[in-house]
Amino acid sequence: MRSLLILVFIYMLVLAMGACTPAQPPANLASVPITIINTPVPTKTTTGTPLLPLPDLPIFQAPTLLSIEFQDANQGWGIAANDDGYLLRTVNGGTTWLNATPPGLTGVGYSTNLSVLDVNTVWMLVPNVDFFTGILFRTIDGGLTWASVAVPFGGAGIQFLDASTGRVLAGRGVGLGSNAVEMYQSSDGGATWISVFKNDPNRADSSDSLPMSGIKNGMIFLDTNTGWVTGTRPVDGEVFLFGTHDGGVSWSLQSIPLPPSYETYQYMPQAPVFFGSDGFLPLLIYLPGTTGFTFYTTHDGGTTWTGDPTNPNRMVRSPGQYAFADALHGWCWDGGSNLYFTIDGAKTWGGKVISLDLSERLSQLEFVPGTDGQFTGWALTSLDDDGHSQLYQTIDMGGSWIPLIP
Image 1 (cartoon, one colour):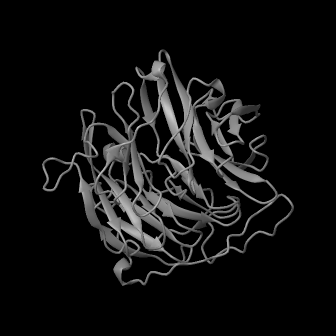
Image 2 (cartoon, one colour; image 1 turned 60 degrees about the horizontal axis):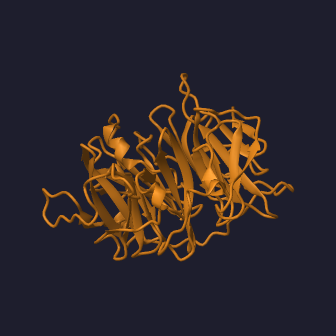
């Protein structure tokens, strides 16, 4: 359930970005049989677990990473900005990166979205120049081979719940604080898609249960029927969290309890993060003269959410990038000298002073669980003036960091 989550997904912003080169499909996804791959997931510990053998993919030298997504302490995927863009894979925690780009594909970059089911099964959505259509690629062997299909969406967030069931929230235009979107679903691994919802009043069968007003910033599905879309609009006391229980056909605003004194503030939630029925709702609060950051929690699969922004123990002092490794352990960091963490499911947050300074450069934070209570984490920077990014790794809860790509 980590796929979107990451990344903080901001599919709407890509509509305003420059065009990319259209992707050329090497094969037809509809002709490829869907197979569920049950691959044992290895882990790396600090006690000398042997590294995995490198797959039969070429080593990629000096990658400039734009985004990362790790499945365990060894296995991960990344998008690199070098030349026309590449999809990369690592099996040793980011020390070595391998070129897993589909043959002949160009135009991989910021607007490319991944959905990673396991270490072998990955979908990659690459928009065409219009950002309203694209090419969906899929591998079931860790990037050794790919199949693809043309799809009626490009700038979109994508999530696969299993090898068959997929969901897409596609951007259909923004303006004056409004955001038209369309929801698609697939039950055959992405070979075919059907539109189940649209909120553009200029189109037939349009619905306003998920309103056009407000800029949408995230989507997450917990199962085939239950999902959420988050966003923001200038409405006092509203947390823009719309839920569906019919696979995205209809939506309703979910009530989030706020203290009475907080009903005049405005909010921006991000897509929830789930570990089974336990979940976290990141919530940015626009307070007078400042911003606050907290996490509401659920233990019933998102039916109810609880939190208390008046409790200083539940607030993160410096809003920043965040990551959860499981239902108890989470981190939040703005790249400065203080990294905040929780070991009780966001009930309380502590802090630790670290020597690594990534102020105003930190773009992504990732943590995964290991063995013996260990956690492995990565910090990725944005591109500097020379077009270079840096990648760091930690194995001690974020206290010390090792440069993997200095």
